[in-house]
Image 1: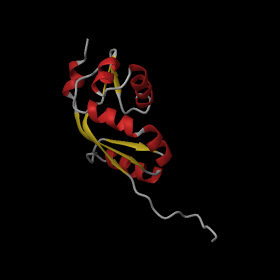
Image 2: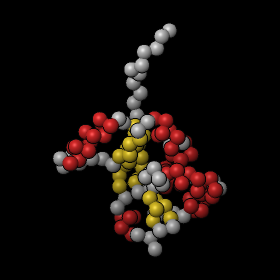
Image 3: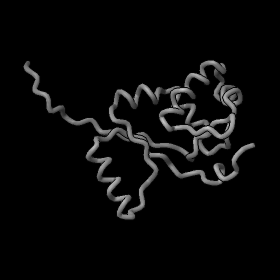
Image 4: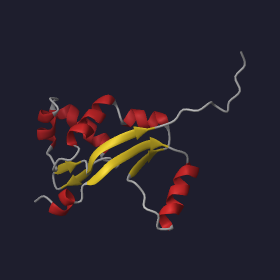
Length: 128
């Protein structure tokens, strides 16, 4: 049976990014002070973010956004991929907490997502 509360609790847009512990700590402190926080998912490195959010997995999340929980088989049909490939992507996105399990189905409990990251000059000194 599908948990109806899950469907009704759809959140807005998930902000996905890569931030250091200082930034995460500041947001956590603000949340404890009662300041409203946008839904976020923070990766500890760009490499981890991009290995998790491959273009195909981003497409999968996009297709799931704002929808009810789906079986892996139906999701595979929707995105026109085989069940095995779809299952593999789900197995990466679930432990990354980008998807949630509802019974034997999965849901992306947001209406969309925005990926945000900044690349700055490295603090390493390179010799020419």
